Image (cartoon, rainbow, N blue to C red; front, top):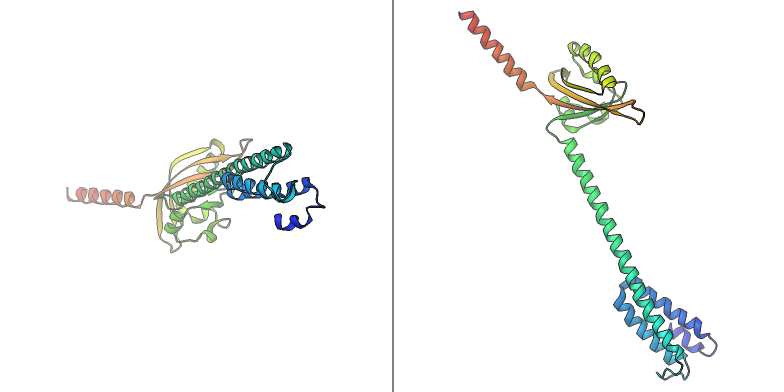
Length: 239
């Protein structure tokens, strides 16, 4: 600013030069904070006084009003620095909050997709709108195969379709069903026995939107029950 304005000090208005210096001080305050801005304001005032205020080329402050200019420079430096620091702090807090929110969202997504049980959601027609990775792995399907394409009934063994046709309307009407057993057919044709509980997600008017369904693999329980029945049958045969 000094290099640009000094050769024209005889024609430039003092207020214009002061404003130019003040803009530099505010820039320093915004970019680097209060203390660098204080130094910039002091240097600016010295340059302003030496090159532009009479008597020029001296550091004498002859006019008391020039002390007001110095105070304005210092006030601008401190105010600008504080505002800059506050803005940076708010930006850092906002960024930290955004990072924490993204981290929490990722943790929730991971918990949903890799839970030890299956999760899915069905729309009013029984079509899958959500399904987690665990259930997809059990069934041997990809998400693209299922979402918006298959109905839950499409994956049921014939003996379970009637159960679903009875329970799904109850879910939409009452908002909950618990511990309903189904036999799901995997992509390779094998049977996966499961236990399903679900609650309904509704809109503001109480209309059904989709289900929140939890699916448990009960293969081990079914095998244990079958083994118990087999053992009981053998004991009965030997008596």
